[in-house]
Amino acid sequence: MESKRQHRISKQLQRDLGEIMQREIPHVIKNAMITVTQVHVTSDLSLAKVYLSLFATNDKESLLENIRNHASEIRGKLGNRIKHQMRSVPELHFYEDDSLDYIERIEEILK
Image (cartoon, rainbow, N blue to C red; front, side):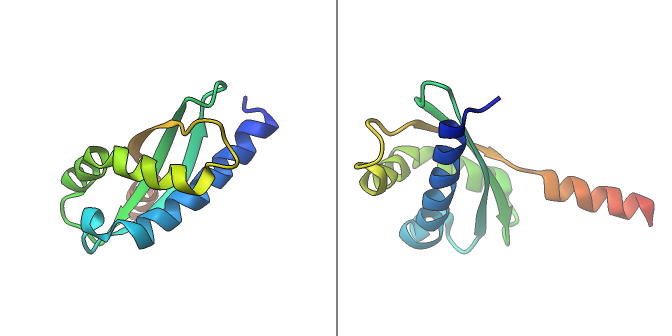
């Protein structure tokens, strides 16, 4: 269970990473739409698991791999935003959030 501090930091990281994905790294995401759906931080705040919803792309795996390859650049941009709020910037691990695909499959089965 997350503490209040972990929850507050997770939400802040989610907002900041969402803005970074949309505005500051168009060369990484190309024309895809990316939504940061969840962020989970460890209790020592050294690691953040970032879950992304990927839209408007045919090859989600290569896009996710490209984002992972640019994780240090994204972490640097995040560090510039949160440098006065946190002592160290957590390491970022990116995962695909496929919950929307799962919901669509369930709806198709029910029809």
